[in-house]
Image (cartoon, rainbow, N blue to C red; front, top):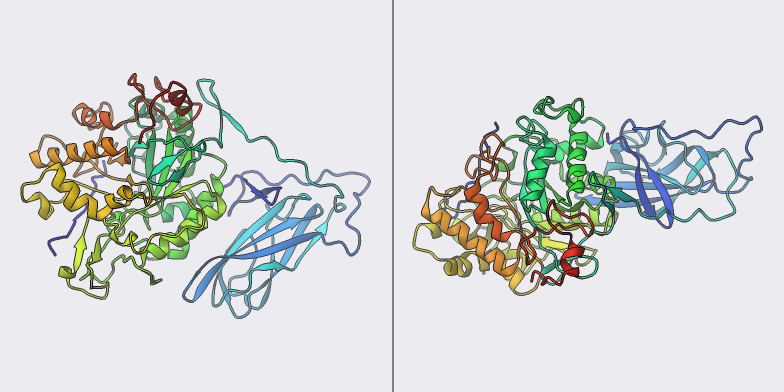
Length: 591
C-alpha cells in the first residue's frame, strides 16, 4: 500500500408504526408509516343519518408530485394528498410517461407501472380527515415527470368544510423522569461562521462520545448485554457527555422504515427488563427517551450501507442491494420520523468515505456527479433531509485521498495525492464546498487518530503539537475553522493510553487544540470492545477507564464552577446546568 495508507479499525464484538406529524402549508398532516401502522386511523363514527357528502363539482382532494432525488437512469418521487373533504379512500394518477416503477411504499402503485398510473391508499392511510393529508413515495427507472399538481379523486364521507382548519396546537412539552418540563422544539442548532449556536445565537459546545452497536449484525447497542441502559446513561450524562454519536446502518434504517425491525438477541433482559420483547427500533427510542431525560442530545451516523460487523471497512455509502437512492430514502425516513423531537440534533451522513487511487472502488470529491462522488451524494442526502426538517445539523466527513495541485482523480498514482485518515481529508471542500439549500446547517466532520491505530509517516519522525497543526490538521481540515468557512466537529478521535509515548503525545495535543479552539467533537468511544482504541468504559461496562477520562475531562463543556453543561435549554445534565442556566449565570461563550 502507499505510504499514505490509513488502515482503520477492526472491531472486537464482545415499520415504523406510529404516525408522523408533519406541518405543511398550515395544515396538520398525519403521514402514515411504510408498513403496518401502530394504530389504524379511526373511522368516521357511524350514524343513523348519513353525513352530507361533497357537492357535485367540488374537488374532494388535491395532490402534488415532487421529485425528491434523481440519478443517472432513475429518480425518486413523492406524492402528497390533501383532503378537502373527509375521505374513505383516494386515488391519484401518476404521470410516469415512459418511466417504470420499481418500488413504492404507502400505496398500491404497482411495480412495473408506466404511463398514467393509478395509485391508491392502503388500509391504514386511505381514510383521511378534511384538511389532513396522506403521502406516498416511489422509485422509478427513466426520466422523471414534471413536478406539480396531479389528478386526485376520492370517496367523500362528508362536505367540504367552509371554514379554515383549526390552528395548530402549541408545540408539545416533554416531562422528564425528574419532573422537568421541556419543550421538544427549543434546542435546534445552526451555524454562524465557524461556530455552532442555538436559536438565540449563543455559541454551544458539543462535547460528546460515540456509542456503537446498532450498525453491527446484533443491531443494538453494545453494553446492554452487561449493564442496564438507564444506569449506563446516568453515568454517561453525569460525567459530562452532552451528545452521543450513534452509528447505524442504512440497511437497519430501511428495516425500521418497512416495519421489519428485529428483536435483538444481545440485550440482557434480566438487567434490562424494560427492553424485554422490544425490537431494535423500540430500543433506539428507549435510548432517545433516556437521553432526553438527562439533557443529552443524539447525532445519528450511517456507519455502513449494510448491517455488518466490518461494514465500516467498505469505502462508499452503497453496497449490494443498498443503493444511493436507498441511502437518501433512509435518511429521509429518519428526518420525517423525528422531525418534531430535538433530541436528535443532526445527521452524520456517512462514516469515513475512503479509498486509494489504485483501488477499484474509492470515494472522490470534486464538481462531478459520478456514483462514487461523495460531495454529490452528501448534497443529495443533506438537501433531502433539510427539506423535511430545516433545523437539522448536517455533518459531512471528508475522504481519504485528494489530488495534489495540477493532478486529478483520474490518476491512479499515489504520488499524485495527499492522504489523510479515512473521512479526515477535507482539502477539496475549499474549491468544492458542500452546497446545502438551507444555509447555516452544515458542519464538516473530520476524523483523526494516533499511531496505535495506524503509524502514519508523520508519527515516524519527531513531532510536536505545532508540527501536527501545521503539517497535518491545518491542511486537511483545520483551515475550514481558521478561515470561518464552517464549524468543525471531530467525529472520531481517541485511543489507548500508556502503551506508546507518541500516542499519548498525539492525544494530548489534539485535546489541547480542541480546548483552545472550542472545537465540537465526539470521542471514540464509550465501548471497551473497540479493538484498537478501547473505550471510556473499562472492560465489562462496570467501571470507567479513569486515566483516559482524566485526559478527556478538560475538553468537556463546564461552567466556571466545574459543572457540566447540557445542550438542552431546560434539562440539565445530572448535577450540571442547562444552556439557559449557563448563560444566565454570566459564563463566557465557548469561542
